[in-house]
Length: 422
Image (cartoon, rainbow, N blue to C red; front, side, top):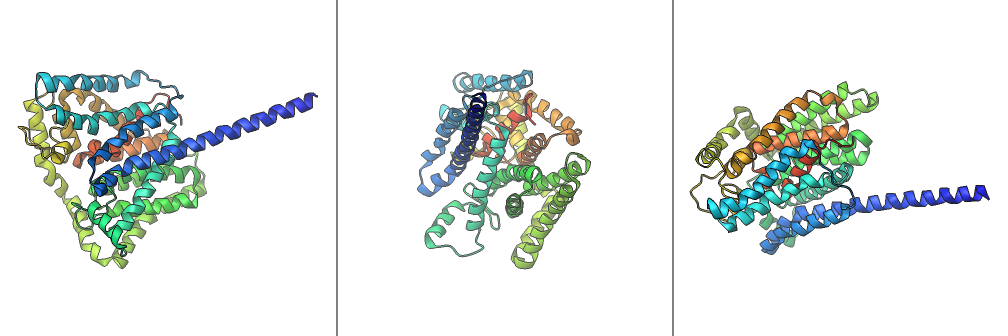
């Protein structure tokens, strides 16, 4: 009788474990689909000519919360600087609109939608397991990579796809690979995706992940974004150093990983130079401009604009006044535009509110860099993704980029998570 009862209990435990695993897998699928739809909304809005689709990300974020709401939201002393900055920013919105009158209500609404609401991603890092995010974002990256390669022009498209391509590629500069939001946004997205797939390769080393790594590196290079190239180069160097020092990874696996990290960029460049000869001149031109520092020269006037705006109004000009919202709305005001260079855009619009937060962040980013060899793979993934996006922010308004901004703050939440599970 006791033996039967024991077997019955064991069977119940197995059933419970299977159900638990099924729920986990289903949540990953749902999260992947929701984030993919979120990331594709700009394309839907462009193709349909209906800007209302941009706002659909708000219910998507809410649905994500509903999926993971049973997970306990926790905060620690490490989160205090962010919480202070976040709530001060909320308090400053009515002050900037109704008292100081530095910005109109309409522009503020766009600014809130573009910058403030995605900051909720910080809190979501405490309820969404990190491995769920890695798998989901890699899926998002795969979808956008397929779209980007399909639309790039390597092969002829049916007429209806050609029409879609002409809409999505409007304003995209020659030779730059794009998905649904331009090459800048694709580059910022791939900056994150490339690190995440490296996480999967290091932890599991499956051939499917290796193929994905090659595809993502290929798209990285073809975005022709110099910040992406810099990030990719730094990723490879730091991960090679990490593999060389870390004793927890098998020697054979290390050799394979080191080989892949060295050979993939070389192999892609060989394909470009041998098969796609007409890209060589443009590729070399972009590379030379990177070496000469022309990217800095191109944006230095915009950075000065941001500094001048801050000196004029240290409390901040208000959300949406000088960045991408200004460009989208064709806004004319008394402030100097900062269309490229997120740090100076943030300095202009939020003034002294976010300065302490970012000073602390960069101090920690540098200090933690000295202890990379002690990090787990997941910790390293968070660190590198934020390092890559921080580089991207020098020349682009990354925290205004649709979808990417939400993931940026999600990673920021994991970065400051004192209970982050390795």
